[in-house]
Image 1 (cartoon, rainbow, N blue to C red):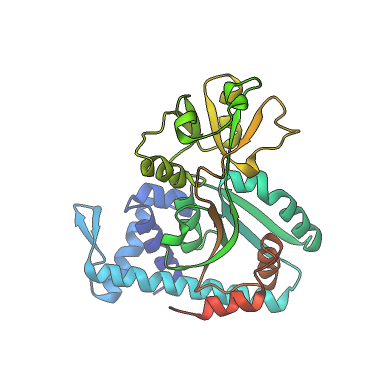
Image 2: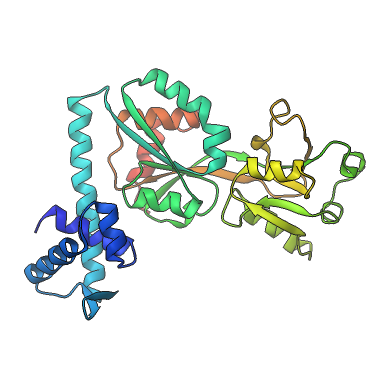
Length: 308
């Protein structure tokens, strides 16, 4: 049994048994993956996959347990490398952060600059995606930490660290009638076409919930994953925007006006997700504390060790 076989196996499952995608991800060929998985099955004496001809169609019950253990073994192997790096090169290493556009564009820049000033030899990588993709990157070992608002609390492999709460604003072109409105309500804003986030992004569930609670269908005409895209179409006059408040800067976004909407929607919580089975290097603790100063190393370690 080789670690390479376990990597091939896990990536095949990650890619929904699509060998061409797994081969592309692993920089190898489909026959090579198929051969190594076949050798692993022969060694273990069980079928990991049900097949239709040469095509994998389903993971067997035994295969599900094998994949789970293989992922743990790969995680342990990666932890061994991290432990060695911790003691052989205190100043060097890598940090991969999986996050959404809003966090990467509006919240992280000053934190990352501070971190890189403190740790100039650390190679930092930002990987963007929707919250589900962000969480999956950490559970699969592709990233060290996830930063997002939606979805990551559903991944039990991750320790959830609440960072900060935020709410929303409404952005409109200059001289928009809403700027003169004495009372901003859901009924009032729903008179206009609404441009906001895609359903998987940036606390969109709180917007949906507010309208559902009021017995209304939101008049959403356009959705996007990018706050800047939303503002662009608002500026073109296609509707009013509902944004995360940290995504609006009065100087940078001077063609537009913002109206506080925190009274209309429940606040959202941005969290950091860390794989509870991973070894956390010292500089990762530094980054977490820079991003959320109330999260101290001792508290994080306690939560990582708590299996409940």
